[in-house]
Every structure is written in C-alpha cells, then in structure tokens.
Image 1: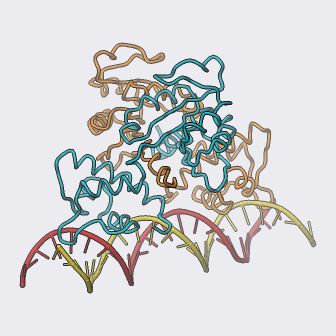
Image 2 (image 1 turned 60 degrees about the vertical axis):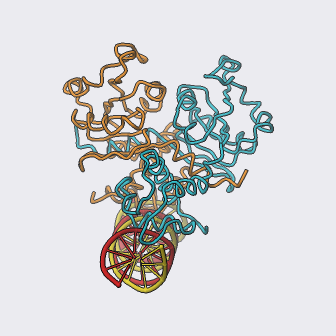
Image 3 (image 1 turned 120 degrees about the horizontal axis):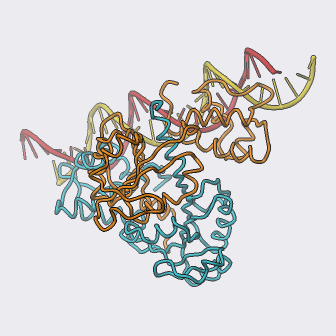
Length: 206
Length: 206
DNA sequence: TAGATTGTTAATCGATTAACAATC
DNA sequence: TAGATTGTTAATCGATTAACAATC
C-alpha cells in the first residue's frame, strides 16, 4: 500500500459509484472491461489501480460486484460513517447539508459554524449554527476528522487554522484561496470559478 | 497554442486569482518566484505554463501584474462576460446563483430550469424557474455556451443531452454520473462525494 | 481442454523540474 | 558592467497503457 497516486484514489471512488449502480441492477460479476464500459476508464488502468491494494478478482472469471464494492468502501473508509464539521452557514453550506449524496456516501455533517452573530443560534436544517469560536471545544466531543470550508476566501486561512487546532486532519476547501497547513493535514480544493474558467478556455470566440 | 495540458489551464486560473490579489495590493511587478511564493506552484512550472501562449515577461525584471492579469483573463476568456444556463433549482442550484465568486469572475447565470411543476414559474433569487422542456427554445435567444448540471445523477445524462441540443459547448456537472457526449463538448465533473472519499482515505482508522 | 480474464511487468506517454543561454 | 530573471531545452519523474504469463 506504498504511495498510492491521487488519480488512482479518485478513480477508486468512481469505480465504487459504478459498482453500487451495478449492484442495484443485480449484476453480480463484472470483468475489467465491463468496468471500462461503465466508467470510461481503461480496463488496464482499473486492474493497475486495484493492484495497489491486493488481489480482487479471479482470472478467467472477473470480480464479484458485492465483494469488490465492500472492499473499495473499506479502502476509502466510507463503510464507517464519517463525521464532518462545516464552517460557513451561507448558501453553499446550506446546500451541502441538504445534499442527499453526502449522506448516501456515509458523510454526516454533525455541526455548523459561522462568525455572523445574526446567524449564530439559528437553525440550518436541523443543525443549530454555532459560534466559530467554540469550534475546538465542540469538537472535543464530536471528534470529527474532516472539515469543510464554505466561507469567503478572505476568511479561509483563518478558518483552516481553527479546524486544525480542533483536531481536523482533512479539509475540503471551497474558497478560492491557497491554504498553508501542517504536512499531516490533507486538503482538497474545489474552485467553481476555476472549473468554469477551464471550460471557458475551450470555447470558440463568441 | 498547440495542445495545452489541462493541469496548465487549471494553474492559469490559479495564477489569475493570485494576480488579482496582488493587483489589489498595488504590487505592479512580480517575478516567477514571487508567484511561487503566492501560489505554491513551482516557478519553472509557471514560466513553462506561460510559454504555451507566448512571451509575457522581461528577463532580469519580471512580469507586469496588470498586463499579465489582463492577458491571462483573455486566454481563459473570462474578460468577456460568459452566459451560463443552470439546470436544477434545488439547494445546490440556489447556492450557485447566490455565489458571489461566479459573478466576480464574469460568469453570469442567465436562466434556471427544472422539471418539477411545483417549482416552474417560481423565482429563484431574481430568476424565474423555467420548464426544462423550453431549454432549447430559450437558448435560441440567450445563446449561452456553458451549462451547469445540478440535478440528481439519474437525470444527469438526459439533461446533458438537452443542453447539447440547445447549443451548449461546455458543461459543469455536479451529478455523480459519467456523461456520454459528442467529442466537441467539454465536460468537467465536480463530485463532492469523491472529494470527501479521497480525503477519508488519508485518515487513520478512527 | 479451450477460452476468458486476471495481476504484473515492461513500454509508452506526458507532465514537472532543473539548467542555462539570452537579455534586460 | 554585474545581477537578476526570463523563455526554452533537456533531464527527471510519474502515470497510463499494452502485453503476456499465470490461472480459473
């Protein structure tokens, strides 16, 4: 399990989604080329990706959907429910809490924080919005390891530091800001503006 | 301008964000190592990325912030306002319309569509939610080239086809689904579940 | 057994980084 | 001129794909 490439991990999540789908359709065995069919990812790539984690299939037969699904979920640590802290009770934060996909994938937002006194104390869906100052304290109880940053870019670095202080080890950052954090904290950035810019590049002059 | 790597385009957007920031701070000249400082991206990488598009700096001096910013915006086609169609008037759609970053980066959501008759005709912010069936018709007027899919995964493929029919050439897809589309249509997928799964992988057993 | 498909090694491809001559 | 920094070529690194022996 030595140094798994990030693209491999991303694809693992894609395979898992495809397997859940296949499982629903009562398909119980698949070959690597079936996976290529379903995901668009090269069959050799799929086998190579799995090889980082051991052996999963049977030569001449293929893979057991149910089993592979379970093992991938285990590798990605999504079979156990993961607690997630959300910072930022704006539109995006609200959308994330209400997003069915996250719960379906076993990620549970267990607390929301904001620094706006007009929001603190109010409810966002079924969660009370708490003061960002209480973050560390609240998390001594909750022990969440994942945090989501859904605040303006100007506040992002500061929020990130607070999350790390509170014991968070992995951060999903929606603010268009470059976060400087300790080596042992993993960050993934989602930047809608960047995504749209890459798309716009490909357009012909309008 | 032959075959620019996707990672280069993504970084271009990052440079642009950094340059806007530097410009605000009244800094008017930067070197590639200043950019490395600001973005964490290797200075040689930065120069290499620019080299796909021509010459931008002066040896011994560096780059003019104002000029570089303008030229990058032009390359990414974000100096001109881009019209964007949104499909899906749920929480995520609502968050996207209300997201200040998009407008700031010159992306304007000009129409929202849904298939839910309880929503059609209502307003989402200042936009009337329209019937998805009218998509192509509405876009003969608007001529938007970018579409955003913010619907459940089960509906994503169908929506994508409708967008393409309506003349959209670039799609930002938030549904965890693999879209099959004509070669000349560009797609970028944003999958929150996948992002969180990659993060969860890096956690130690809890 | 013959056909299918795996897991893995080797070959290819592409992207990142380093080095340096050109030049301000 | 001397020092700084570019743009680009070449070297390194890593990821993808192809090929194939092993095996069901």
